[in-house]
Structure formats: structure tokens, C-alpha cells
Length: 319
Image 1: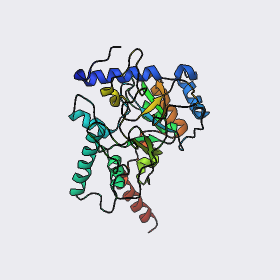
Image 2: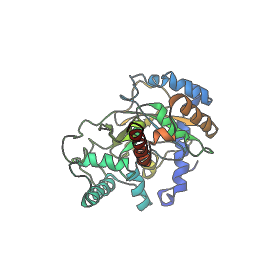
Image 3: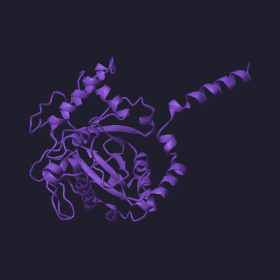
Image 4: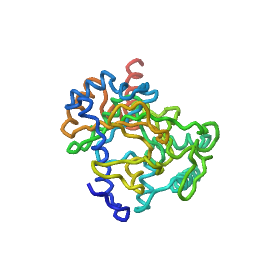
């Protein structure tokens, strides 16, 4: 495909670029995943832990994310909101920092976040679908598979497998965001944060996060270095569009290397989920894994009236 310049950086262009990148990096054929059963068997046998020559362990250093449309980017909700306001040109670390700082101030001004650090507040905002830098992932492949197949049954989905390498200089002890002490510039950010990808450990008290076996990844925005590129079937993604494909500096692999370049923040693998697999996988997830819309999105608020009714009935029966 021919990639447009950033002057023509429309959603349609971004979708075409992203889909081409993911199709270029899918591992289905290499891994023998040629139908829904083969995918299920591959996940059940935990063969994903053999994707690299270094140790991989689900929920420890390997995480999963499902997306129901192959044209979606691996991007945070904060990035997408900033991109909606800044249609052309590169989004910078400074852009994201200014946006998240303004968001935190605004919600605190509304009375939210008492006795919470900025990071704790951001995790709460993420739970409630507000724009943050955090990217939801699961410790198990099954919940992520659900997200890849629950919607958009006429288009292919994606299952990402992500091995973050971490960022040692993060500060989780203070009241600010763990990355707040890293400098930002108009062009470049702090090298201790830029291009790093880290697990954001937190206490998952939210019922949905527990049900989804969820946690978060975050990282400094993908910065252009020689050799750090995304490619489509026949072209290199321009630097200004790179973060529209992935905010995270992940090397998406289609082989089993012994090591990666030190500039990358982690490794990633792409499994494509054809649209005609989705309904069958949804049924199997519900039957064999008890994973469905009802269990993944527990309706605690909607169930409150039923709970009161049951308690009243039980009390009346024993009166």
C-alpha cells in the first residue's frame, strides 16, 4: 500500500495503515492457527509461552489484549482524545502530559480523588472510561479473546500478546503520577521513559477489573530512532503516524529471535481472529470458560434492586 503523508492523516488513512501493519505481523500461519479450534487448542496448551527464546509467563511478564477490529491501533484513550483534537502532525509526550495534567486538575476540582494519589485516581478514571494513558490488558488470554470476538463479527479482530521490558525509574511511592518526574520537551521526552513499556501494578478493587483479570500497561510515547520502525506489506510507516499504530514501542515479531534491539520497550505478537470465527468462539467461551457479557461486565448497580428484594423475601420466610 502507499502510505499518505501526515497532511492526509484522516481516520480512513490511519485505519488502512494499522490494518496493513497488523496483517503484515500476524503469526497465524507460522503457528498453525488456521481455524478457531486450532486457536483454542494453542491457547489451552499455553504454547504462547514458547513464542520467545527467553522465559515468558502469562500474567507475570506476558499480557494479552483483544481488539474486535483489525483496523484499531494499540493506543490509549488519552492518545485518541488528543489525536481527535490534533488531526495532523505527530502527537508528542508534551501533548499527552499537558492533557493528563489538565484532566487530573479538573476532576480534583470537581471533588474527586480525595485521599488518592494521582496514579490511584487515574486508575479509577480508567475504570470509568475516562481518557487516560493506561492501556487495559489481561493476565489471561481468555478474557482478551472475548474482547477480540464480542463485536464487529463481519471484520477480523486481533489478539495481542505483549511482553513489556519495564521502566526502572518509575516512582510509585509519591503522590504524583509514576512518570511525572520525567522531563518533556516540544520534540523529545526523557530517555528513561520514552520508548519504555511497563506494567502498572495496582490494587484491582473494581469488580470489572477482577472479572476481566485485568491490569494496565503504559509507557513513554513511541519516539523515532534508527531501526525502530513499523512496516506494512511494502512500506515503512512515517514517523508522524507511528504512534497512531501503537503508542507503545513494541517490536512486533513474526519469528523467534534470541534478542531484540535495546531501544525497544518490549516484544509483541499478533494473532488475527477472522470474523467468521467470532460467534463460535463466543459460544465456546461462555460454555467452557464462563466468560460472557454478563460475567465480564458484572452489573452490580443494576442488580441492587434484585438484591434488596431477595433479602426481604429471605427475611420474611424466616420471620
